[in-house]
Length: 373
Image (tube, rainbow, N blue to C red; front, side, top):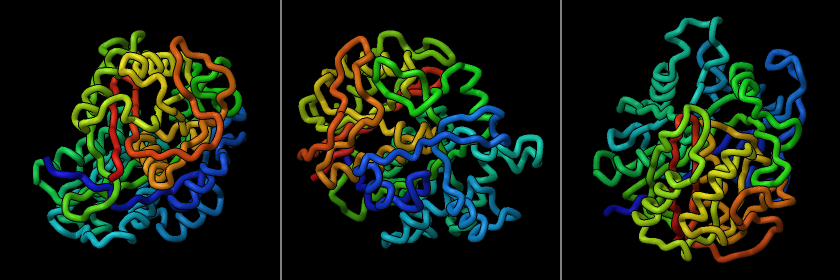
């Protein structure tokens, strides 16, 4: 089986304009989640992680709104950062662009023609900007979209269909998205607290994140395993047992040829909703991973939806390179039915294998295993 190397990354998020600065803030345990009062999104104050005003102004200057939506501009910015540190030619037929999103330009609903809002339109605009000759692929599978896009890239590269894949995921914090989660009474009244006894729900965030994968350019980190599963339980409620996510985790570890004892860190989905955190804890217990150090990035960036699996993989892989555990903000008292080892304090640790988990509406689950030589 071909090795799938992680050769570059890019990030445009509430934590900053690039991946290195975002990782530095995570290492300093600085959250981008703050209270906002924006009546274009909600009549009530809400907590979330939004782009800074200067970031939005920079996007509008670099990518005029008559040609690009902010969603598309964010994707391009993250991709340009990633590509700037590689030697690959994105204009080659051997390179594929994969776009991950859940809502894309949904904020334009009712204001722009339907064709302009569709994800395939955004993907084509991004493809044409970079002069890539291949039809871009789109992954929109709820909150596992970013992780699934990486799994799809891995499989395409292993099959020899392409030599490089530029995987980009993005979503924006909009009134449509916020109102949807409010309808589930899932929005936390303050900063979210993944896996904590007093968690009250999620914070939303916005970001674009990009990872470049290659079979021809070697690098220290590889995407060694990836698998998906489905609960077949409920449209919006996860499995009550965690068995289905555990199945995905076990298949991903099997593909990566690692055992539970080999997993040095878990980058959990960790939404801080009652049922998701309970299910995820049960899944990790079933997979033999209750003692592996675990964190959720949601209290730093909010839930970035289509970007989450990619953004959280970037932070986890950078932590693996730095041999540093990521502190899970907001956690004070265990609040899940089975034990998990939530990281509360910064700690240096030799990290050679990381598990990234994801779950989403419709019962979808995904698991990735990143390994370092």
